[in-house]
Image (cartoon, rainbow, N blue to C red):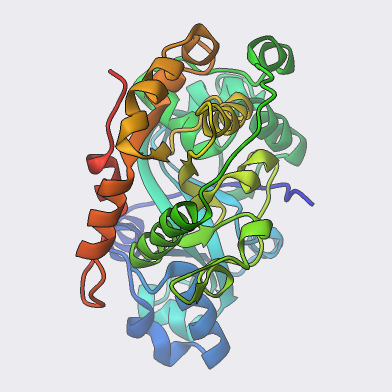
Length: 373
């Protein structure tokens, strides 16, 4: 069942204390080890799992009926928009929450009335943005002059309409900030561009499994969650069973196309997708491109990288297909969205990062990939 992701406004303006708090726990970030003495063992384990033990941002709210009511409705995977001076300055995803006065006092001390920001929520996938609130208002159905006050949730009907129409919030905000064209998800357009190809897919199991296993291991090294389709989770390579290294369930949400669960390998953190890989073994090299085409059709504003992984001898065929109007049209732009990764490059990256002490960065794989243009 798809999760209806909620969106919360947090107003981060209010003088020197707010500025200092924002710097201390959002810009500077914190670590699990730093706050372990304030959490019980179950909370520590959960936070480490959700963040992959990487630094995270954290914010909180003081007691008050409105704040408590809003905080209570927060769930993992929901979005937070931080507002200041008529602009959205940060977007993030909620990882987990705790009510913890002692931890709040450690982070932020107390306000003038003796209260502390004990209704705490931990944030992942945080991204700085610079977007006028008035620009976002038109997509949410608010009047241009609307601006948020305090800590509040956006009407869920407005949120569902926004995410169903434009896809994930991170991608939409990036397009708004950079002035790119925002595409509205249009089922008629999808039908117009969708090409049905009847083909027999012939896989070379050993090589396909090898690439899938190496991508699983690289995703783990990058401290990300890794997903492979359910039918692939019992596969093995060199004695390694895939299901022991991937997440058992794909966290589904209204703004995440269900088709992504069929992609060969997906890297993600929380609900947010970080990269998607199709390992191409079909006789006509269509199958992987078509699956990524279906995904992009349902999420035209998505900005996470898409990769075709194949033998280098297939690169020219892949590029020629991506240049076809079916895939390079103004709605999909697959010739710009999809990059090519050779088996050789995957093997080299995996071998280089096998040592436990090696700190692998997920964007290195994009640097190895090749673009059509």
